[in-house]
Image (tube, rainbow, N blue to C red; front, side, top):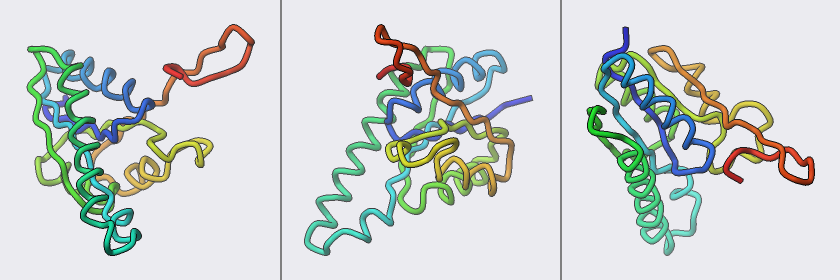
Length: 155
């Protein structure tokens, strides 16, 4: 059913569950996993000219760290490929899925900028709307802390 799965990661806390779910799904279907992190070109382009190279390098370092986290969570049974692309995140995720002929895209529902979105992060929403294959959105589970406050798991 699923031979190739793409998991999009930005290294945020909320994507960790999406990575775990993706790796479990890949184990169940003996699927190859492609972990993708996208350097958001709009963030680079919106920065002052003298800071762009520095910001691009910082974002690439963050992307590499996000992929290293996926590699650490994967086990020997997971056939894992990692990639970093630069561009508009949703468009790059969908293009990558087309390029590798993926069967499924998995993503968290909120990323690094997720606090601004109530239900579905803007990147996840755009991926759902434009993906060439089914999209599995994995929301971070919420927990109740000792004060009775609701918090996202991992907070």
